[in-house]
Length: 380
Image 1 (cartoon, helix red, strand yellow):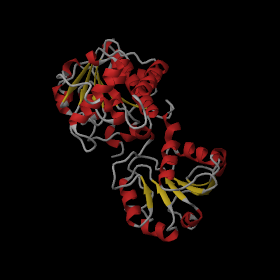
Image 2: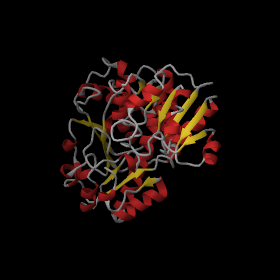
Image 3: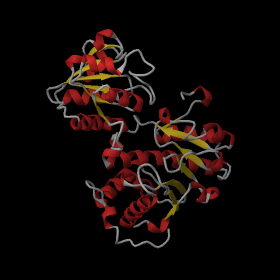
Image 4: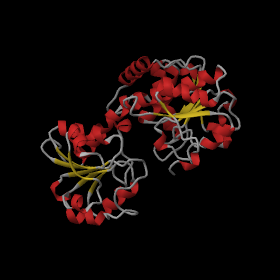
């Protein structure tokens, strides 16, 4: 990066709650625990603000020969702020010499990159990138396969180009244990006290058992609407009241709850609102006092807010909506685990393995989650 006044923006060395030394301590711990070793490898990732500044620093701390971080204007921050915050954290980590900030992904030396991450600053990973990558380059999806979208990463193009690509099994690496933190944060933001309250959890997403168990341990009575058996739900500390939120019997019990937690099976699934048999105004009519913590669907959150209910995260704001946005440790652990998937695939490809063999090695050694063979059958 061009010369920068590194002392003028000392405020970027920390955010409001987490100092750079604390963040870097977490980074080093996670790298050691996951045994992430990027020595001899080159990484393309993003620069950013807040916790999004961490990705290139983690790669450099793990020994990457060169890290190229895309710093561009986004809805969250201006490019200059992404550069300043990333640069400041890299300086605190002592890894400036291995970090290069680039304004677009196409300005990185793509033919020498070993690992491409699919973080927002790099996306889309499409033909414009794939046609230039080296024969042994790999793409790592930094979240689970369920979060993949064709507009973000052209999986079919990766396969045509012989580029290994895999996601991250978030449950296997322990990331789902952080899901309750975001829920509890959301409840607190909406003025709901879990201890002694009644919370209705609806949905069958992989994180829902963690949420039910945490709320029960806090002293909440947890009503659950999910297809899982009553016995299994009881093991988590919940009380089964139905198979799904749209059942009349479940709707009839909304008035008992202080809060509703929506835990969809897959991103993009809707448990109520447009496209379902349960409208937001029906929920508001049954329980006008209800606070709602939404999993992922913005359309649900907007419909509920328009019906007059309190909703977190707000569909109208840009505040945090997940544990990775609230706390540094979940973000760091996700980044390290995703880069470990990339490390295993990249070393396999450099050693002469086929893309498929590299992906399978990552599944065996780094908790990678593989995409379906026929990507056309995958959801959205």
